[in-house]
Length: 537
Image 1 (cartoon, rainbow, N blue to C red):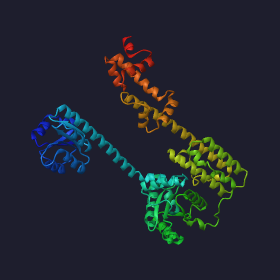
Image 2 (tube, helix red, strand yellow; image 1 turned 120 degrees about the vertical axis):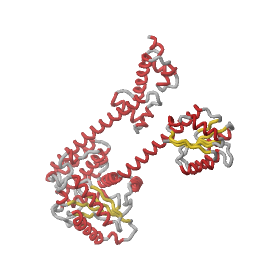
Image 3 (spheres, rainbow, N blue to C red; image 1 turned 30 degrees about the horizontal axis):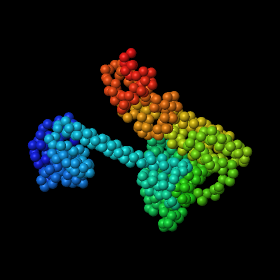
Image 4 (cartoon, helix red, strand yellow; image 1 turned 60 degrees about the vertical axis):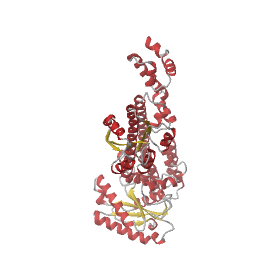
C-alpha cells in the first residue's frame, strides 16, 4: 500500500486535501501531515513515505530545498509541488529536481487525483520491475549449479567460446577456475556400490563426491566439479601458471587423490576410480583431455578400483590413423550439427567411414571416433534438451553397449541411427517453437489492437528481430504479420460499425489509428468502400 506525506505551513491546505481526496480508492493506506520541512523530515525518518506533496513557500526551508534533500536521502520517494506562485523558475527548478508534477494552488481535486494516479501507477510499475528483477536474480542464483554444470559439459564436449565470454560466465556463475590457469582434469568413475542405486540417489552421490573433492583439493587448487556427459564425474583442479611450481607435482596430486578415494569410501561407503589427465591450459585443451581420460577409462577394468595418470599408461599412444583427421577438419562435426546442416553431417560421416572401412583400424581408434562423434551428438542434444540416454538405450554410453566397437560397420550404423534421432527431435522442436511463436504473436495482436501494435512492437515482446519474426510468420501462415495486424483491425472495425453507434473517429482511436482519414483509406482498400458507406449499406 502507498503512504503519502502532505507538507504545508498552512495546515488548512493539508487538512483539506486529506479530507477531500479519495485516498483509499487510489490505493493509499496512510496520509501523514507536516506543518514544516523539519517535521516532514522527522516523519520520513520513521515512516516509509512513497509520495511527498509539499508547498514551496515555507519558513526555515522552502519546498524546493526539501525535495532536493529528500532526493538525496530517499531517492525512491516521488515528489510533487504545490504553490500559489506560477513562476516559470519554480517549475524549471522542480523539473531539475525530478519532481513528478507541479500544481498551482488552490488545487483542483480532479487535477490532484489525476496527478496522484499517474504517480502511483508509475510507482507500481517500478515495484513490479524490481520484483521481476529480484526474482530473476534469485532464480539465477538458485540455478547457478545447473548453469555451471551446463557450461562444464559444453566445454568438455568441445564448444568453442571466446576468451571474454568464458571469463564472464565463470565470474557470473562464481566458478573459481580461471582462463589461462594450468589445469588437470579428473574423471571419476563410481564403483559397483553406487551403480546399484536409483537415478536420483546416484545424482546425490555424484554431487556429494564433487563436494568432497572440493574440500580436499581446495588447498592449494581452484576446483570446479560437475556431472560429465559420459557417466562419470568431472573435476577440474587448477592453479595460476606463475604460482608455486610444487602444486603441479604428480606425487602431491596422487596423495590428494588417494585421500579423496579414502574419504569417499569412509563417508559414502563406496569406491571410486580416478583417471588424472596431463596438466593443460584451461580452457583451450579441456575437450581433448576429456577425450583422453575417457579413452583411458575404456581400457581399464571396470570392476577394479584404480587411480591412474595418463602419462603412466604403458600403452598410451596418439592415434596415428590419418583418416580420423577428417573429424577435426573445419567445418567440424560439432559446427555442422550446431547450425543444423544435416546433409553436411551425413557427408562428413560418409567420407569418414568410407576411409575407415578401407583401413586397418584398432578398437582404440574406433573408440576415439566414437568419443568424437558422441561428444558432438551430446552437445547438440544437451543444447536442445534431448536426453539421448532415454531416447535410445545405449545411445552414448559404452558401459551399456560395447558391441558397436566390434567393427566399423556397427559404429557407422550407431552413428547414423543417433543422427536420425537428433534430426527428428530438432525438426519437432523447431516446429513446436514456431507454432508457439505464432500463437503468442496472434494473442498479443488480438489483446492490443488499439495500442501501438506493429511488427516491431510485437517482435520486441517475443524477443525476436522484426525481420526474422516476419519471415517465420509468413512461412508458417502464408500471410505477412503486417497484413494480419491490419486484417484483425479491419475485422474489429466491421464489428464495431455493425453493432455499435460509435462515431468513425471513436472507432479510429479504439483501433490505434491517429487519423480518421487514414483509417478510412485503409478500410476502403480492404473492403472496397469507406466506413460510412459500409455502415449505410
